[in-house]
Length: 582
Ligand SMILES: Nc1ncnc2c1ncn2[C@@H]1O[C@H](COP(=O)(O)OP(=O)(O)OP(=O)(O)O)[C@@H](O)[C@H]1O
Image (tube, rainbow, N blue to C red; front, top):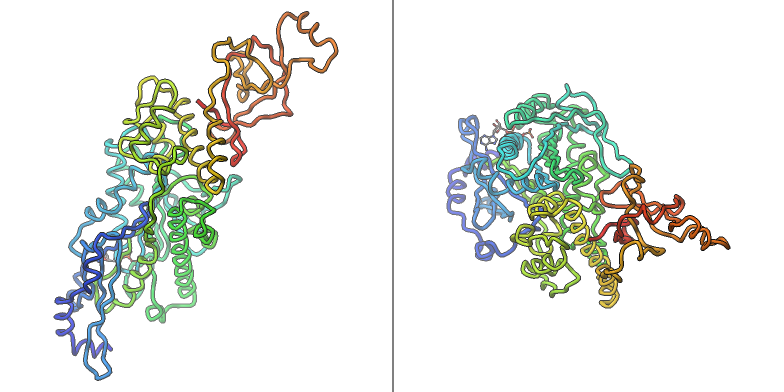
């Protein structure tokens, strides 16, 4: 085949230069977009000086406006004549050899940084054939992301932490600590932890970059037939961002993952047994990763509604490889945090590598989950995902308590779905921009919207009357607002206890009955003591922020004078916790 290619080289170059896509592809430009939280792009690197010296031929062309990359192969017809066989692949973003890393960053990667800064989880994966430019691209993109994170243009006070590790087979090694072995474990809350990993806390972009560069120098490399310094591991750089303004907000996380290069069978024939096993492990984990990214994108697309038949068929096998286990929170559909994921497929431009490039692009195309053309659901006051920007503004103005949270500061452009996806830290920070809004108020309002959203998702299969009655009961006004608090005390009421009685955990209690209610002389006893006392069940703070446990077994007698205010809490069946309402 090599001889056949060389004989027809000039004709091949001419045909590639005059390649015309089919009419329907040319017209398809912009008609279909991928799932908005997952974007897939491709970068074709330029021919390298040594490849130009060897007179290698370019076999990939790009059509960035239409979103296509075309791979051209020379085939022999049955009559022995050469013919051009072109395969076209559609992606969200396409970058040709003349595009810079800055172009790739601004077009594809930039949204990940503010998302993580606001408390969300963002992940960039770069994958492709060995020698296709993954490490080159990821290190450039890391440099640009580090500059944006640390240049002080992003709003709010944050602490930035970095850790870097590589995954080789089933093992993990710390790239910031002399490649010491670390252990990936799932903790009691089901979160993946890196036991023994060193985390650095840089305070400038230069410091952050120097940690990234140091980690790269420890990475395991080996020569392959396509790259003298091929990375034989998946390198993961995790930048954790702690919100100093909203202490209990979950940390934002930015993962930058440079995946090990995939090799095709013909390139691994010369490998030793160990190298063959290593390559097999890499290919298996890449295949699992594909299933996970695609499964998660499909789940997001269905908005997690289990009643939806499509969602029930979604399987995300994140436990099948160490790589996806480490990134569990990105793929676990039971997690309650929205994630942004970007995949950069890297390909070589060489005609000789058309086969592997087609594999990379086919894989990339598979990750794209086209958005089905569904008629948007009509507006429903109880379903935030149906709210337009205007309806959302009105809802915020009416339901955010006192003082009213400014809707234009909280949701300047968002609609209901977008606001529900906003990470908690970002939501609370935006609320705090309204003067006199306290962090507790902001958090309670976040919980109110989130609960409405969860209720609307779980109750979509219920009848409309069931849904509206469940939600209406949440917004009930206090029945006797003008009667003094001490005179309204009654069983079932939740109260805040005065500071002097509080322990670290107990600030609230539910009144069960007057003290001695079951004794014959109950009334006399109350009169004798001259003050009302109640048997109360204590309410403890739960592990989740703003959540509480009612401990019926932990009873305490509390005098009415030691109770300072009524507190409104709601029972949340899905989480089995009590939550404070406004
Ligand atoms: N966009 C680009 N512009 C210029 N040179 C590039 C570009 N992308 C990659 N290169 C060069 O191509 C070579 C291979 O790139 P790199 O090592 O990043 O490949 P890789 O995909 O990470 O390979 P492996 O999987 O084997 O580690 C390097 O010499 C790199 O400098």
